[in-house]
Length: 105
Image 1 (tube, rainbow, N blue to C red):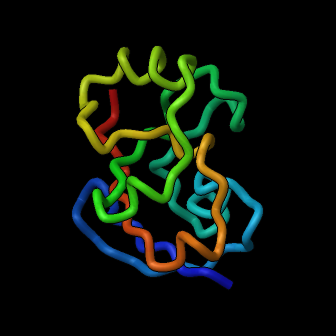
Image 2 (spheres, rainbow, N blue to C red; image 1 turned 30 degrees about the vertical axis):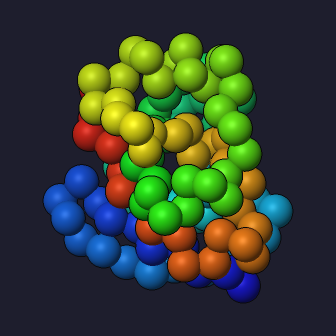
């Protein structure tokens, strides 16, 4: 299984494995990171699964949809590496990807 490296809001870094085909949000949630709320359950209707993706992996990600972009506009911690983790399918091509859970709004 591919590995995802997650940094919490407090700066703790943890490598976790996830099943390819799940969303990055599901991998984070299933590995016990409670600070990633994901209130809408992955429906792209909130921004509570906001993460910052390591720029090294940005080119490997699908383009951002207009809905995702609009939701991220409401996030106070948005930057050039911001993505909604529910919109990122976790695949073997993303093995070793680093994400940082965004600050809570």
